Length: 247
Image 1: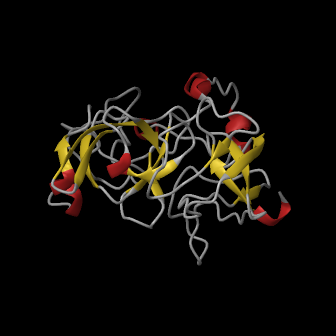
Image 2: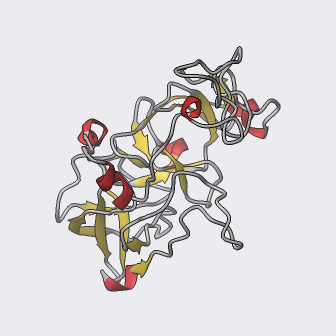
């Protein structure tokens, strides 16, 4: 739908001075950015799925929903959501069926959800990629325990919204891209191994012939540890994590 699309501005990983600040970005094909409704804040107004579309900016497919008042919005399409299905979001008396959005406190234990908020009203941040989902496992002291796709167990506030169901396009993870050219058109530039570079370009660089990295532990391009526990110590969200993600 035209009103929900804007031309995506390209920056190719560069800042306002033209310097590369994010490597391996650039060469992206011109595309439209679809405005996705991550908040699902049209409470109590039912909507009907009028089309299912491809979105080049994400791995999951999207669905165009036309609400009873005539407004149209894009949402992420969960697996099993079909054309002409009626969905709704709200805080009371909402049936936990695929495509409906509601606070986590209304979800029965064992419900599979996606597009989970971390702050009430901010919009979905967790489980937004193709085929991903989280599971409601427990509720206590104003928090809901979620098992995330990474294996992490995390506490989330009961007032945070989530959408019922697993996101569609599950087979995306098995996609073989085939050529470097296809990746470039997606906006992903080639990556070069650190050991193949010179010492000024990467901590692993230098040496004669096929030498190793020359250090006890691998480093990133910026000299930080690349393996092991790399999460920032004392991060604000540590208190919400019950079990760490799988390595």
